[in-house]
Each structure stands twice: as structure tokens, then as C-alpha cells.
Length: 261
Image 1 (tube, rainbow, N blue to C red):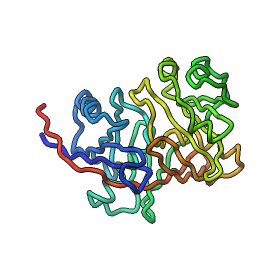
Image 2: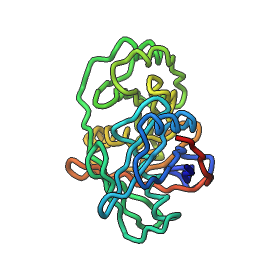
Image 3: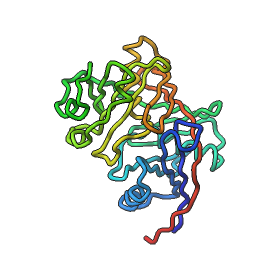
């Protein structure tokens, strides 16, 4: 069996920036253990697989260690493959996923994802977070991840977390964030228990960050940057219980996988 594989850098228009994701189109699903093995072999934060379903597609995401319920940058990458490589000629794509139906609109070289918000709730700062970052944040929240707010963008850039403590936390990962002068806010994301020490750009993190910053800044449209070493830019808009997250993408490589199953 041979499969096409595309590696797409999401939330950037420049190769070697943004967040790389592997995308593998399928006609029918492979066994779960095979898809998990492919994701482990790719060793990227996410590998996306999709199959045709009705007028849209069924989409699933795998880290090197596990399947996840929501991944923004791999959704953006899958839409890029369909629109720009496989010749999908409609204005928008609907993906059926574990997080419901997600649509992606192709407009002016930007891909806009319509995702459900994950509004965070205030919480006490876990001991592991204080030890991991060697400093106490000004606020802490929890949703799918912990959202840890620091005073300045310099705090976000300078932090070197002790990942051993982050692996002990009960949620998926930890987002650190602060206000920015050039952007509305900046962030970084760590999920070492899922095999992702630091994710370059995380769409699903912004489904949690946007509700927080919309309330804090009293605005619904925002520009954000995830300030990892690769970095990536996002345009965000809060729309009731949905968030529109827009970005660009670029193809890095195209290849084939040979399997004997």
C-alpha cells in the first residue's frame, strides 16, 4: 500500500516557520494502531488523516503518542492540502471531527477556521507550575489546558520551563501568555506528556486564549503571535461561542509512504 504524505508549515507563509504538520489523505480508514505508528514515525506534533464523507471529510489527528480531540494547525494544514494541492474547488470545507463539525474558509490567501471556544475558568496555581517556571504568574485558569498569565512579553520569551514538572499535571498542557505591544497578546504552549515539549503554533490553545483576552482587552478581533523559536501569527475573532482563527500555510515537502499491512 502506498500513501501520499504532505508536510505543511501552518500559520506562516515562509518555510521553516510556523508549525509543521503531516497530512495524509485516505480513501478509507487505516487501523488506529497503524495511524498511530505513522504519527510516531513522522515525529511531528501532529499528523492529520482525512477520508471523504458526504460533501465534506472526516478528520482525525494524532500526536506521536496519542489521538487528540482537537488540533488547529493540522486542520489548517489539511485544508491547505485540499484547496491548494488536491484541487478542492469550493469556498469552504467542512470537517467532521471529535470536536464536532469544523469549517475552513479559503479567502484572500488566508484560511479561516471556525472552532468551538473553550472558555477557561479561574483556578489556583498548581505547585508544579510554580516549580516548572520558577516564578508565580499573575493569574491562572484551566480549560483543556492550564492558561498561565504573566506580566510582560519578556517573561514569556525568557521562560525556560522544567518539563519534568509539567509532565505531572492533570491537563493536556500549559499555555503561558501576556499582553504585547506589537500584537494584542503573545503565548507559548507546552505539552510534554503528549510528546510535545513545546509546540511552535497551537490553534487549539487560541480557542482558550481568545475568550480570556477578549474579556481582558474588551475587543473581539485580535492579532496574536506564538513566540516559539519558529513562531507563527494568527488573526482571531470571537463570535459568541465560536472563535475564528485565521492563518496562512506553505508546503514544505511531498512524498509517499510504503506500507505492508
